[in-house]
Image 1: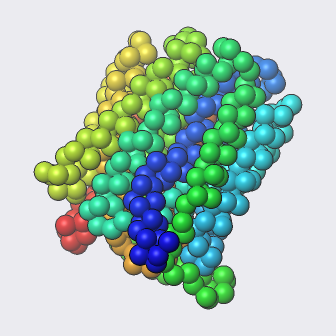
Image 2: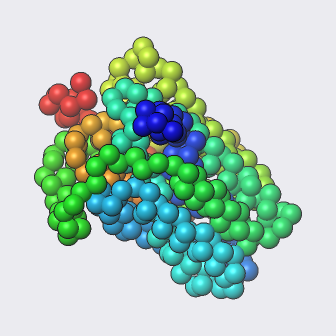
Length: 398
């Protein structure tokens, strides 16, 4: 094969990378949403409170965010493939161990290990997106990935509910490990996307975080993206208690309502992809932030006498998140020209850390979790709108 043919082959693999990038990005959703229908069952089986069992979600998110901070700089130093292969290997092993857990404490520990591996896929997939694509093309690719990725939270709880009915909860983690194997083989066949690795010592590469924190436009955009996701992760942690314990639904019916909410995320990303052809991305972001605010208001005002009284306002919140997220992520990446791995890791670390806080907050024994969730959506969207308007006056995103 000639040099030109080899280059053309590599370029073809890169341009056909969307399914693999979407799968890598979806690992956090696959790792959390599949187990959601089993949370009330695990609490009953192991005689623990829901707040304690929710530690399998919260500890996953905290660990996930912590390890993001390492994978980003390591990938800037050594390339994307080697950290990805290592992380996926850890994820597969931890998934098997989770399936073998015999107590809540064991499951929490193995979930921490699982998160340490899953962190590689999410942050590095976004860095790879910046390596391969640029400008408006990257924004479209991020929207495509968001649409495909939304299938994970849509199908994962349905699959988890089906497994609970026909098999048992350990099979949830066996299937997660199988998906990890698929991702591993995909990365093995994929070329390195980072054109030039750094020869600097890893300690110096880690200083990239200090430089990023001195970039005010990057910091504010990271806050905006992270705060918009706060109500969605609060919903993830509180949804099983609201639908199963609050409305008395079965695990299977709960999974359908959760899938309905995930459909909202996919539809928002799909509309974003279509509307960016005729509407400026910054206007779509503004519409999305306003939609989250309105959804929060409806959640607070409604009486919620039926599951649909909760599902429809939450649909608006999640649809609005899906509408604003692709251009928001792209605008974050536009604020940096170096250290894409570190920038991606810090972004995802921030919104997963805020997501863990949201999960912890909603896990308390509130008298009305729906009202709390509405207050979270209303408060976060109000802060985001103020920050976004300030950035607009300064010309960012124009």
